[in-house]
Length: 332
Image (cartoon, rainbow, N blue to C red):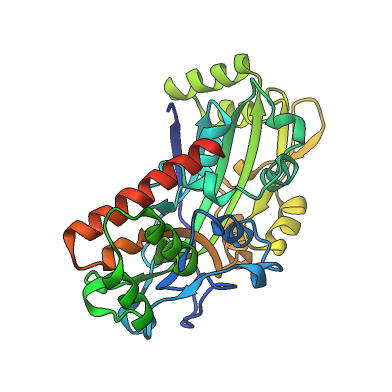
């Protein structure tokens, strides 16, 4: 899939605190998740809607999983980037938005993450009208992703961690060739477990283009276009729709940008542009101070089969799960 990322380096002063907290809801290390049935509800956290996380179903599968996890500060000595990413289609737009999310065996994790989302809700999350989600439009995303903490299991987690006794027994009793034993297990305990997640925030703006202007912008970038040309090509002069500047987790950011990132167009109108942060360290410091540090901006789910000690049985479980994941992705 065609995608071009052009990065402008911004030196930012980051603030962090020493507290270690988990995210909202049940997104926590070592918990089991059934990606075939309930994974879409985890999207509530990713979309900034934590009000319904009480409905999210994850499973307690490990005895004291947090004992086998470490917390990494991922902001120190980090040069942060304002990214401009070109997306020729809607699939690419999702790929970029869910860039930090990985689900073993899934080619397109965002299909599982967005399974419960209507077109209207998706367009609202991207800050553009429904009509911009139609056929033919192309997209450019300006974004700033600020990870703060990465919580991950130890490398030898599956050897160290102790499964709940009921789960260990079910693995022992599982018979190769009986698919229902795998699917029943998944329904009750999960298909994957949360191996790691990253907390922080992402501020982004989606801009929608007709193909002719998208291609003009793309060629300009390939030929090292100037900052002034880039700003013009990101303006309403060339865009079909100027998306809102949105934050994954901070309402304060969205209120701030409306008054601090106003740009005057060549026609005398004003518009909001995230690109206005370029070469403005004082604005960067202000927006960083408002960004959230508890939103999920990265997630890695590993298959439950990694806990099965017998290689043949482990392979059988993985094959059954892989077939069901691929079938679900095709049908979504």
